Amino acid sequence: MRLAVFGSPVAHSLSPRIHGLFARQCGLQVDYRAIEASAATFAGLVRTLAEQGARGCNVTVPFKQAAWELAARSSEEATRARAANTLVFEPDGTWYADNTDGPGLVDDLAARPGCRLAGARICLLGAGGAAAGILGALLRVRPARVVIANRTLERARQLAERHADLGTLDTCSPVEIGARAPFELLINSTSAGHDGVAPALAPEWLAPSGLCYDLNYGSAAEPLRLACERLGIAYSDGLGMLVGQAARSFQLWTGQRPDAAAVLADLRRQH
Ligand SMILES: NC(=O)c1ccc[n+]([C@@H]2O[C@H](COP(=O)([O-])OP(=O)(O)OC[C@H]3O[C@@H](n4cnc5c(N)ncnc54)[C@H](OP(=O)(O)O)[C@@H]3O)[C@@H](O)[C@H]2O)c1
Image (cartoon, rainbow, N blue to C red; front, top):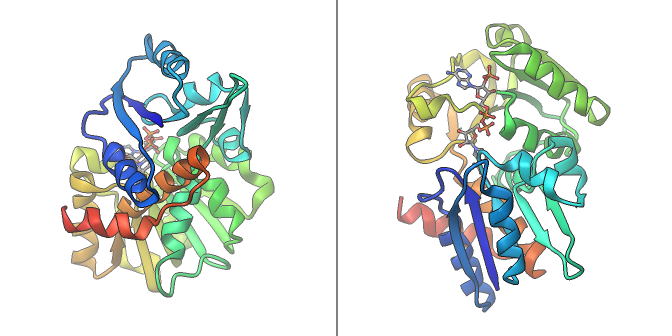
């Protein structure tokens, strides 16, 4: 089965390795490649892949919105996010778009002993593409409320408006988080870690046994991981979400649900 991930930059993507491990688990032959694209070449490269008989592809930054716009049909998750991380090339020649980031995050959180999302108070830091991709799935597990805190408040408000029918949502700027605390779960979806910066954080924002979950992983996760360590806050990076979203994509293409926990353990051993 032919598959790929499109992005820019994409050379360091872990997706080929993750899907290779899934394929081995499931006894499937999979040729999964990372393909560098630009705004000018993205649509054409996806079309070529589909014409070559591929089953689908993953799409990462900065093409998730373009991927959603290319598809004839899309899941509710992708429609709300206005972005897709997965395309399925259907046998009739049409393309189906889904966004598995949110379910991947929820799967990873649900696998943690003692982590209860139903009824939890959640603060979502950031209102960019990743926040849009996870908000619908978060609200579907019925938290008590979700507060979206973003540097650009208007972006948080627009995201909240698109999801207002799914649950109790509030928005604020990061300096106002303290007035809305405490939270059982603080999710960092900002890209600040890529610049070596951790978003501002205070221990009193977290309820006792609260968790700070960072969508970042690898070196981009280091600033917040170190800040949490310093402040005595429980922390998780987003590697489990990466594997979780990949497992959901793999299932869409193959009909088989791989063992994400085994692949995550494998990656952690080597990082
Ligand atoms: N684990 C996974 O599977 C997974 C999946 C998807 C994404 N991610 C990670 O999630 C992160 C966000 O991706 P994205 O696609 O949402 O990016 P994006 O669309 O560019 O959004 C970036 C967000 O970060 C905020 N931000 C950037 N620099 C900041 C700073 N110095 N201080 C405070 N806020 C800052 C932006 O605020 P403004 O709106 O004010 O600019 C915006 O809310 C990336 O680091 C990405 O690697 C991980």
